[in-house]
Amino acid sequence: MFPAAFDYIAPGALDEVLSLLSQHGDDAKVLAGGQSLIPLLKLRFASPVIVIDIGRVDGLEGIRQENGHVRIGARTRHRDVESATDLRGTLDVLLDAAPLISDPLIRNMGTVGGSICHADPAGDWGAVMLAVGAEFVVRSSGGERVLPAVGFFEGPFTTGLHADEVMTEIRIPVGAGRSGGTYLKLERKVGDFASVATAVHVVLGGDGRISSAGIGLCAVGAQSIKATAAEAALVGQTPSDAVIAEAARLAGAAAEPKADIRGSAEYKRDVARVFVQRGLHTAINRAQGATA
Image (cartoon, rainbow, N blue to C red; front, side, top):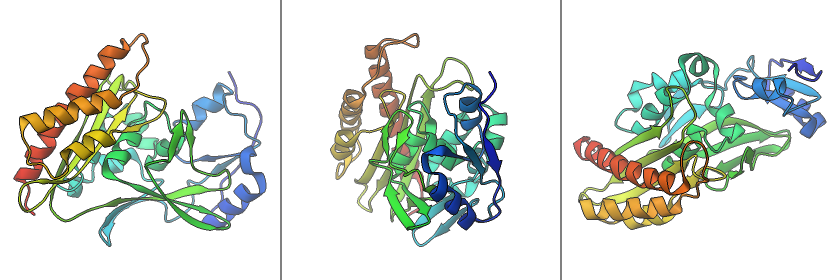
């Protein structure tokens, strides 16, 4: 199919983008990497009056560490996260997730912020952002808001982003202590959407106990899921097989999968449990081997 007719504009400044969004609201769509929006346009699942291409706007790309946070520009490409090796030992989960996103062509063009705002329940970054406690900086003509990842994903392809807002940055806190994480994904073939995926991030205190833990689940619910009960079961505990197994059980119980051609609900729930158990072992081992 061909897209319905629409106007196209590529502003050179963020203020112009925000002015256009203020004028057009729900009739506008923002184009970042285009890897989600263009298929929607071709299938006519989206029929905007105007498409606003933010590819020429400066200041929306790059990864840097500043004021206790890793800050990722919303238009940063997946490939740029994949190659950000300085994050190893701090945010392992990002480095493990990025190479598993689709294929090299998509990673070369697709953007982190665009994927997050698309909010596909099987999209990889949603679970990762929940696990690391990310915040999203969004702008409109009326000012700036900072939205936590928790609560941002409201349902399939639905977020807390307003029609006149654009995401400009992702902020991920980097706490004191030794950290480790990983991302595990079950896919039918390389480059496929996840059948089940899990993101894990832990921080160990000076006494070796788990001071914080984040667990995100992908493709097992109407939106990305944060396994809060499993996280709470880990905090303050000395890592052990029993502690990890219980947290994994709770994470599996938090999954809300539907049966489909990829497997039964029971199968997917158990995969989530097993992946969280494996992920926690990897994350804790990495944290224990890290230098504080």
